[in-house]
Length: 198
Image (cartoon, rainbow, N blue to C red; front, side, top):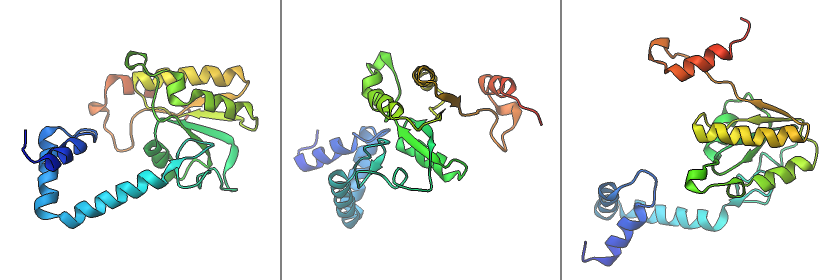
């Protein structure tokens, strides 16, 4: 334990970041204090501003600085399509593909009963209210291809079908440029079962 309380507090704060353990936090803290105090000030200022200004879009739950995010307020978006993603970073990845032009709903997580994460924790009641407004004709389930992501997609798919809305799942399989030799069995199985006419 350091006898410098401010340094200890900085290391503990850095440990809150994902993937940052005690040694990494110490390296970051020492780097900022030894070599980049101006960078540390800029990080502190940017973090403070983001915490104060960034809120959740009232419609899609994505990060925004206004009540409606740019995507939800765009008249060029197809409101009959709704893509469900786990996180804002998933939304950015899909949107940057340039292929999808509908709206989104960000869960900010996925169902995980073992971790105590249920439907209310990921905004399912907000999603149901959005679906009940009408206008959505198809829901694209774009949760990650993990056990929890698949369970979440299944759960939401059932809710969607109960409302007579079409539910689709993103396709998955061998990535472009990937070699079959290095592709895992589950990915190959899904690629084969989801094959389409060439």
